[in-house]
Length: 252
Ligand SMILES: NC(=O)c1ccc[n+]([C@@H]2O[C@H](COP(=O)([O-])OP(=O)(O)OC[C@H]3O[C@@H](n4cnc5c(N)ncnc54)[C@H](OP(=O)(O)O)[C@@H]3O)[C@@H](O)[C@H]2O)c1
Image (tube, rainbow, N blue to C red; front, side, top):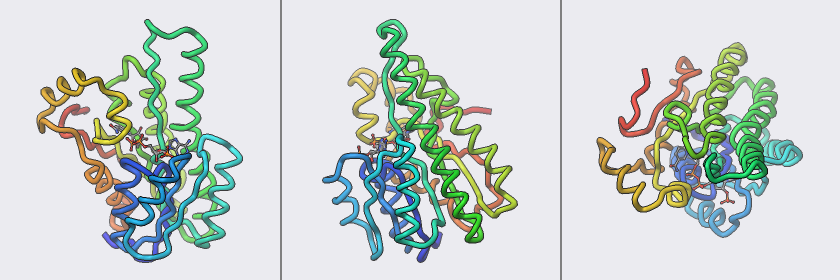
């Protein structure tokens, strides 16, 4: 996969899957915009580890409407075009219905959708408008196995990822004539801070016992699927959802 001189913006790239994706794109020649929200130290470390030149940090809260516009404008002012957008930034908030009051429930739904769905929708809109003027591009959205399997204690998370899948597939149809190709990568549990925060030691042990691979995904394995969907040869795969869950949940 060759991304020489492609301009790639990855949201939530200071850590975890986003960081692995930034490293993988840079290794294939891309110039990478590393977006993050607050963890400047980790973002600086990521930037330092990227192969090649021309990468930059973009500190913007993608859940904030004005920052969504500012992020895309800033990226375009630096690179001139946006070739690939990876909507990876995501949050996962526990709001078990047995233990949550209405205020907590309401806030969990609002915050989860702002980050996991509305940010991706709005950044896709803004990036696609740019891509339409420059001959096309690719948008890859990072969803989750939870969209299909259910998320009993985080229903907003499961719903936001299911909506992200539907949005991606709708836009894949609408934007194909503009040579803008969209895809989804749906990971199962992946060794990142998010998984470490979400799982108790007992849950982790159960999960590993039930996994055919007896391990979680590594962020690099998710990044590999993201790069495939953004690569030149994958245009006709637009609208696809790639599961990266080690055969732990097989949907028909
Ligand atoms: N890990 C898993 O098991 C798993 C499984 C399925 C799907 N996923 C999905 O994969 C994606 C990445 O997850 P991860 O595990 O790598 O997460 P992570 O380790 O928690 O890292 C989250 C990243 O997103 C950034 N971020 C969060 N909110 C943001 C905002 N409002 N604006 C800008 N950046 C923001 C963080 O920036 P800061 O460093 O500045 O905080 C960080 O770079 C998410 O969409 C997640 O839902 C993860």
